[in-house]
Length: 87
Image (cartoon, rainbow, N blue to C red; front, side, top):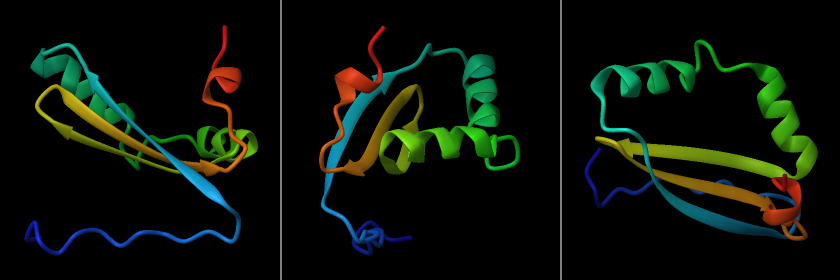
């Protein structure tokens, strides 16, 4: 894909908001391989996605370059990140 093509944005039938997080994971090739495997479609548990939907996460995308991650999360408008992930 050429960088000028972009990625289609999904539209939802409810008001939404977007979170973007930048994360660094340990710069270890074996750990990165394991991380990628655990987040692959082959091993991703449907229960995780169901749990995300239950708390108001509509869509989540994670992009990786080396050990740097960009996570984009689309949520319902009244989603409270701190409340959902407290403690």
